[in-house]
Length: 398
Image (cartoon, rainbow, N blue to C red; front, side, top):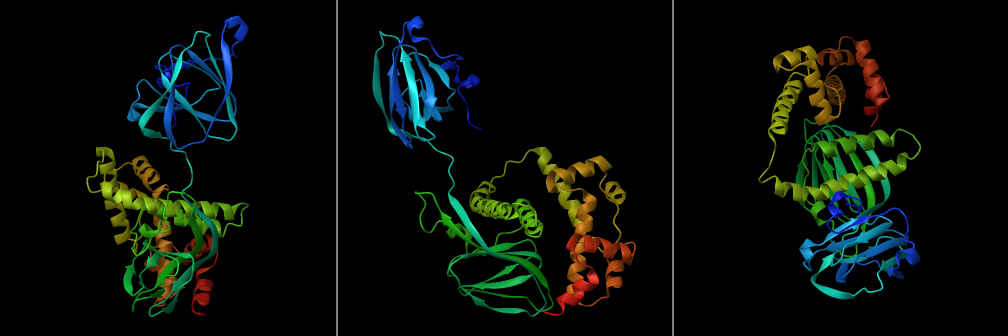
């Protein structure tokens, strides 16, 4: 987090005060100065006496140091009224436009402007990329043998497999996407898609316009995103699910929120290239290691026994956990209670079984351990906003 001049860390450089200085009463002099917006800072002021800075307009960052060493300089968001100790090197960098301040010192002052090499680089919080528009977003359900011959266009396209398996060919390179994996096609990349024999698949497609707005980024900034399959990641899974939910919510500002969710998804994928490198030598505390290990075992058990009635009491007994510990484990790592996770998984599997067209709705309800066809139908309708029988009819009209 950003430090402020009111933080304790600033005490070695100076302090803040509450009321503007009365120059006549304090026998001090002042000069109005202006701070400039800049990224590279190479010159610093150095006074032999105490200096006061009273910010008149705008917002600025104060960069200070006890020596002219670039890596020893520190940046502080400036309080309106700041005293700087004698012999401190300092300068102000504007964060907003039209930053003016009053510099106050004693009549017997002496100061110099000193240069620093290499320059101090002031990093502003600015966006690197911007998603201008979502041009299309679709949730598709395809059966065994489906073939999309392919296309290319001048936009980005994200495909996320919700369940099942999908084969995609990008510029003659073939990739297989499994459940909860995604790929991004870049502008003008020819891509085709198909569903393997004996499989079915549901997937999300998002077509969007994106550009870099950082002056130091090259035109090929998006290369880390394309020509690769991104594997399951809890954060990405949560973002995609939230995007799907918002896309059908009809709530005010849903479109703005969809843009934000997609932008965060893309930024997380950009970060993926760095987190992968860090994972070569993971540093994980014991508690998180235990949580990951026990959670993976529980999730594996749930997936393996999803066709049976699964109770919370049964999971607690099998893994020697209290009910509250199990709830906390799921809440902290998956942001949902275990019962909802199990029900959602059963409903996802039921939708997949309906697509396969091998069982009746009643058989699917029984196969997945629902207590009755009525309970299954009600839960399915509540989640997908369509009854399972109607869903089946619309599916096979395709």
